[in-house]
Amino acid sequence: MSSSIRGLRRSDLTHGIVQVSLDLKNLDDGLRMAAIAVEAGADWLEIGTPLVMAEGTRAVKALRKEYPDHPLVADLKIMDGGYGEAAMFAEAGADAVVVMGRAHDATVQRVCEAGEKFGLLVMGDDMGADDRAAEGRRLEELGVGMVLHHIGHDHRSVNRHLGLSPLTDLPAIVAATTVPVQAVGGLSIDQAVSCPTIGAGVVVFGAPLAIDDETSFTIPEGDLPAVLGDAIARVHATPVAQV
Image 1 (cartoon, rainbow, N blue to C red):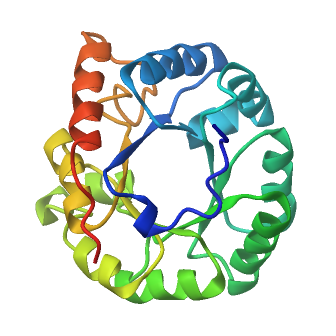
Image 2: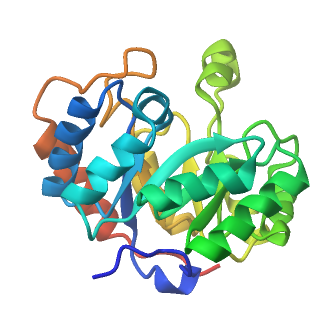
């Protein structure tokens, strides 16, 4: 099985698949969490931003060596220098990179050019956009292969009274785009499992399920393999709505 996910289409996703985010502070923890995730049935592994910042391409190379057939997503949150940064992680073994929609059009386009050359899936993150559906359309028009609908941790934390959730705008984003969509940011397990029924077939598990919280960046205590395994099985059993 090839790890390439560059040409992924919505129609390819008949049932949900799971991306587990390794938002950890060092490579040892990243590899330990990856082993738990793969054993539990994870389809994709995400080198989360904390791990990227701490270990860089070393983390990608180590995970590629251990898991040659699992797609690896590097959550780089690219804002500038798009081609070079995407190329560097592609050469290390990443299958997908994340570019921020708040970046200039030229940066998104340059990341997409690198995606074309190196076989990367480019994921466009809509965090901070005022009109999420319009941002999803813009990112797709600029060439991204997946729209990542993201309500940031800090924004949610400061504005708890607003009850912010990615599910609020998710149906409109799915309707406004044709590429695969994923939603992240404060979802419960039940909410995450419901995403495929809205048309967002790639489900992300990170904090607090796979990561203790978004400040300590540690692996949670408790029976994580069983809890994660159950959550992944539920996603795999959920049909993806073809909107």
